[in-house]
Length: 365
Image (cartoon, rainbow, N blue to C red; front, side, top):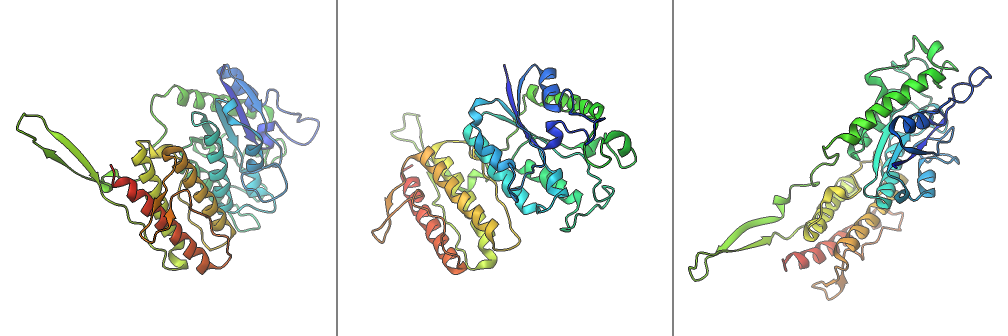
């Protein structure tokens, strides 16, 4: 039987309001979905939690770390209201970082797991959804759009209640038990029915939910040459590959973009050599407004991903550089210095070593 784990906040847990007239939803949204689809459900939702890891609660990343997703077939994630509503308020960058890191971990546990995201229902804590802005200056639309956009980048289907609203500012006193956030029991049952129908339609679809490779492989392929031999009519085709060339990070302004470009090139080259599908790698480029902790964490996690992909696909890539030193993709190290110039130097050395190692392999193909 299909087993689904649900990670979410108080709505997925079943809160319908905060008085005796609004007990926990019966059944909860996850339980109703499970009954509708004939699945077993492990509801691990916790009230007050969110995508971003900005407080001391069991948010998405803390929850992901607790479980081995090889034990599940499906994961449904439902966060976002608390990212917008509650201090400390989550920034779009913090949300995308958490989504990327957590979903990468889930996929690494179980590459075959089916992932689904339920976007938040509307919150009226700061007024109507039309232009509602929290004290940190982030609008509800901005936060919800961030979640939806990142889900698309991570190739995870996302259900957006805004497309066909159940809850509106005008009907909030009837649809929300507290008039602001938590849907009443009847609305939660309708939500569950919609989500179950949506998930079922995607489960039955034969269309792949993944895209093609991250880049066009023609950039690596040379033309084929034909050796006619002794005129026997048979032809031997030899395919050669153009050596890759990483870009140099020339300063802080180009650090993020050049880093991303080089990572795409390296990951795709590794997968090309191994004959594997690069779209299966759980990494997507991110951009940051400033050079800070979030970018540094992203760089660290990305380098770890490159090393993992290389180790799994190629084993070792050790090769001797022209200087006589041994270089490899596995030797890449995340910068430890807090000085931007040192970070750039380390990354340029990392990328140059990976380039040398991968070109040595390409030359043998």
